[in-house]
Length: 455
Image (cartoon, rainbow, N blue to C red; front, side, top):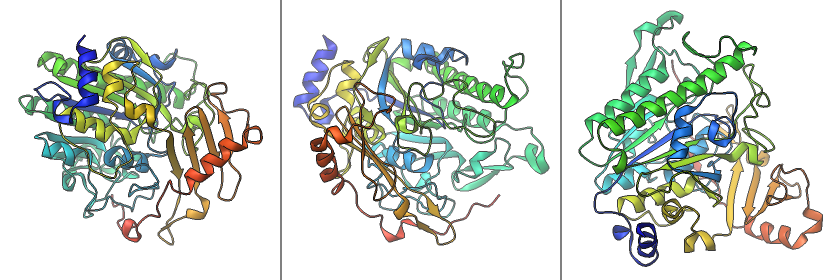
């Protein structure tokens, strides 16, 4: 009955009456390069993820959730701004493109609603000295990596605390004493403890299992008959799962778990490299492609949402949504309004109602992605090499290179995108082509900065 009443309120009332009087804490845990199939709730059978298994059992598992992009920086830009890759500021893994000063982030929106926001882990949306650092976009505290290349190592000589360097003397000259993921987890937990008495937004953007497959020596797969990089990869996923468990245990210890909504997802699909093959653990599930492609394997990701007493337990939802929907969802949870002109819509009706679909979700017709690369010598996006994808209901269109005809797949019958049916459905192709003419705007010239990563 409570869920029905909440949905009725959401359909007829402004956001301020959409949720309970006490504003819920919001926790978004973001993995890095974790594939759809890398965890137990999405079919993984070899890598241990007991805490994520429990999170899914106590919440709703979305099976048609999408990252903001096929690689990390633009995906995070989409998550933070509520604008898809045709509109958001950061559209490539350039390392030199920051958020603009006038970009509004989730933390900015929540700050106006009385929240304290903390970001921990990988940022990737503005290097030191740029307009894009998190403390200039609503975050009270940040600890971790600003630059995505810096985040490739787990034993760096420093991390960033707000806008200053935080030295890690145990890692100087190649030593491996201070594991960054552990430090980031500890800071995340400390943030919860320090702000237990006020509404908070925790953005725990762990780097696991991305980059170099570096782990401490106390990992659980040493006896497996796998190549060492695969043991390390699996260990990193299980370690990530352990950090999720520690966050959930602390929320329970502080009696905050019923006042906290927790989201878990990944920034893009899994990827082969560093000795890891995505086929070994079926990292991307039944989907074609991987990171840096716009087939489902590159952009469909796990999404688990838990909020005891509000989100249905042990439920699976097939309602599609994407990272650009998180900002308006967080705004609705906080009882405030999202900025005008964004691409996302609030998914709160679907989150609270399990399989229920709100009016906005029913009316939405298109999802859009683009993937670009960056010419570091010229410091410009290679827009001529841009690839694009559109989802329209159960139709999925992919343009694998500029000037190429659209490929078309029916996801209801062909989730692996194996059969291009564009020739049989010219009307669908024509409708998507018409949408593509309006789907994006060119990036503003000053999107490209000149910031360089320095060790």
